[in-house]
Image (cartoon, rainbow, N blue to C red; front, top):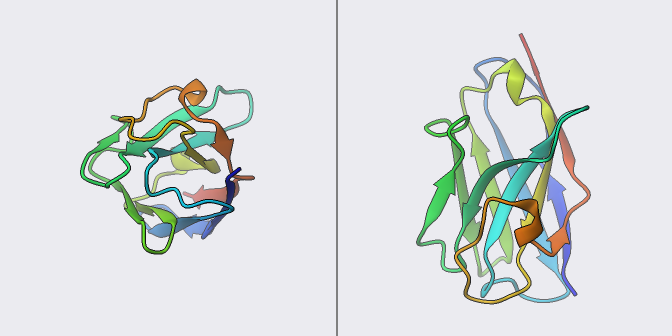
Length: 126
């Protein structure tokens, strides 16, 4: 069983930056793909970015490409999301997720991930 805890959310002005962290416990996640999703009221959970178990391959949604960067530190069992040039439309609850099958590429669907954190709120003011 993997327990994920996000942190780093908050209130920021448009154009600002935040760095989200996702600490994993219960089991190391260094063999598993991980991802970030976000949820706004009335919307589906939206894929943001994913990263392979080594960190050697990443994929970002078009809506965040060039502004957000997913990364991981397997020695710390931690996933990150660096968010720059934030926009009001980035306001959402951000969730990290981990796969349950090792050595997979990681998908863009929420159904590709077994474990989820509780979420952290990011609010971008205009």
